[in-house]
Amino acid sequence: MKSPFWIVTATLCSTLALSACSSTRFGGPSMRSASAAPASPAPIEAVPSGPVESAPLAPIEGQPLPPLAGAPDPLGSELAPAPGAEIAGLPPAAAPAPAAPSSRTAMVGNWTVREASGKTCRIQLSSSPALDLYRASASGCSNQDLSKVNAWDYRNGEVYLYQTGGSVAARLRGSSASLSGVLAKSGAPLSLAR
Image (cartoon, rainbow, N blue to C red; front, side, top):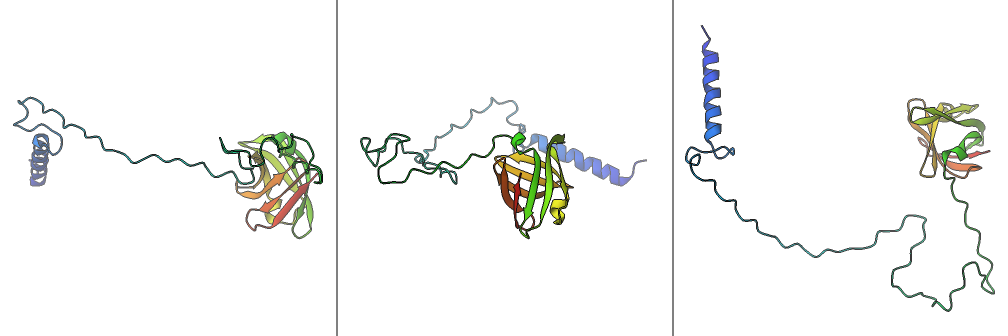
């Protein structure tokens, strides 16, 4: 013999299921509309949108502004010097800064590290892969974060030094001969040289 609890529960579930099937609120057909033809959908009304506006994006930090399309030359085309030409009375233009190396292979090798305190140590950046990074080793570093460096990576012109556990120890920028940056935790300056 079944308990009264099960009988009440079964009856309640059956009642709810039948009422949901016959309710139009839940998207089911009602008894009246089951034999009737389906209703046509309501027409969709177009809503006018506002005007579309556009504006140029802000320039990337450190990059020169591009000339505006259709804007007149502020010096006039007849007054502008030819590229590479010197203007009388003005010193020659400084050579452009050397571009950051375009590959990680330019960073591979031994580096002398100079900390903000003036102490130095050595870090070797290897080309041997270590999961999705590359192996590195530090020797003689008094800074705890630098002494734990065991991996590195080169992304977007920056060298990232990683310590055991995967946290970033330092972030540096520069050329294949010298790098400068900061320690991640303290923000103290740091430089690497060949």
